Amino acid sequence: MLVLGLLLLLVGALGILAGLLTASGTTELLGLDVDAVALFLVGVASGAAVLWGFWILKFGTKRSLQRRRESRRLSRRSEELERGQAASAERQEGGAADGGHVERDPRSP
Image (cartoon, rainbow, N blue to C red; front, side, top):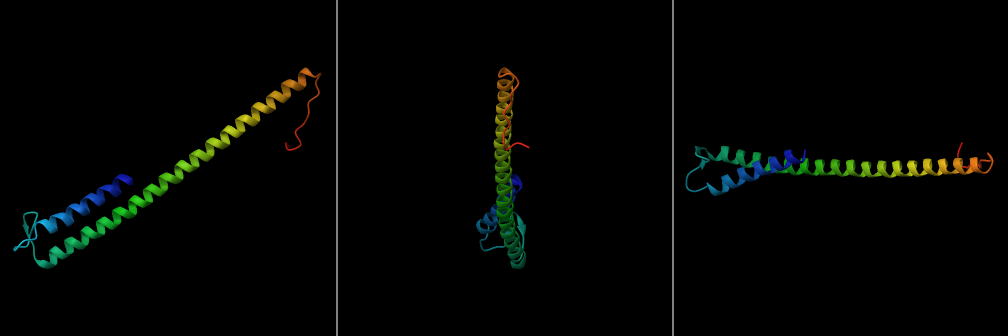
């Protein structure tokens, strides 16, 4: 999405620049003879491409940020689970050394 957004921005900007830089006494755009209505429509299409590109860029960036946040959240949860399992294993090993007496964690089911 990010690449598509940047590509649309580039195409729109090139269309606008081509229209501005080639607008002299004649109505020639990129080597083609065009009338005023066609030149206007090219400008509208270029502007729409720029806006669409910004929208896609924003959407792609937002989506990628959400993925990174979710990945970070899952990594934290995984670390917490691993720490809990290690603590549980330590309690069980310690209980076996005390003659089989294992203290239960009141929070565990």
